[in-house]
Image (tube, one colour):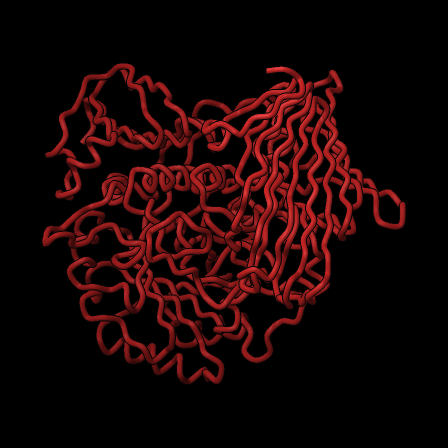
Length: 611
């Protein structure tokens, strides 16, 4: 191909496979670029064009690609688009060279529209970035030297950004933004493994209206160069001693099918079930009474009085239900609020904790949030008032592709460490840690997913029932163990986060069910975490054995222990174990040795003296 020829992007390029220009490599995406590297160092995780609607859902774009053009030391590509039912159309163009890239966008508003965001979003990685210096040039020409935060920051680490300059190991970056006011947020709040630079500033309010006839323009220019010096992060040690967290399950109205619940509890033997009561007067289903230790999450609607919580406690006691842990939270706090925004009036989380203490004097009383770490970080509890702190996580707040979901495992250790700091010495007893979104603090509700697709902010995620879901759960469990988390739930007894169901008249069990059954009996015991998140093989060793998962997107080799046996849980094993709660009866063990794990494969290992 000569220096001026053009060609349509190949199928490999459309899939986002890596392209190279000198020392710069990147992967094209339908709406941007991913994994922008210089001499192998990840300088930018991604740069994408996005439109977010008034509920923060990412709006699908109807696009017409321009085609892929290659010239000497320059790649150009882009697309025309239409969004929000034709309310906005425009053009996006990317130019990538040996020294960086430029992205431009021009949009035309055809009818009045309300949205929360439109334009480029740049993600900076965490490795060799967290805690490192950052230089910002503001719109008035003034410069500021700061740093990427070490602890997860509830507010914006940087605002009013025209230029940001920093290094990633030996690579120096200069990134210039134009066309709007840009700011940065710490996406670890939502377990994204990145810092996000975006427009428009949240302090200007959202959603915001753009009138018909307006034209929107933006550009982002990235320059990269090698400094010659390296500050690369040292590799993690091979194994780290930990105390293994307890495994629980969650339940609430609509997720409490008696047969599914009984099958899940029998297969997993969880340390507890966390029942979420949407109102104090809503009782616990009979089939959960006595099935396993019960914890309570009580949502207090506006107008709830302390006496309502006490009556609920008496009603439970009359049925012989004495919960071990109780966490009460006013319903308005299921939504998210900016740190400097308007917070709810009425009952406070502190008052709710006091009411729970009075109503359940024998229980451990919790505080925190029933949603994400984001909300806990913005509204930390009083640690002198309660006995434990809680929050939940979801992996698909902003993106739902396989790469982004597995990358959240990179952020979880830092999220949990920041939560431990907030807990100030109290146990961290987490709620649901999952791929799918249980509740949406940022909009009217979760995104419907009748087609079972991989989409952000959906409750139903298809990976819940696959080896991917189990591999993700093991990575999350390993991160929780390293951070000293006391307990967490990785599934529900039934419903969208369930682990067993009836299909074609027969009961099925998911790979996650098999994993949790293997782990659950070891809660509170000593173990080790092996491997490094997020990519490659991650494992947890425990009394008499271990379990490993390939959380990467490429095959990886695992050397099993010299003494003992192991079971390779691959795609074939996933199908063979679907109809039984005991994977051992469906699979044949192998002697110790080397085994190649495909992405999301698991290995269960037992030593000779193991159970």
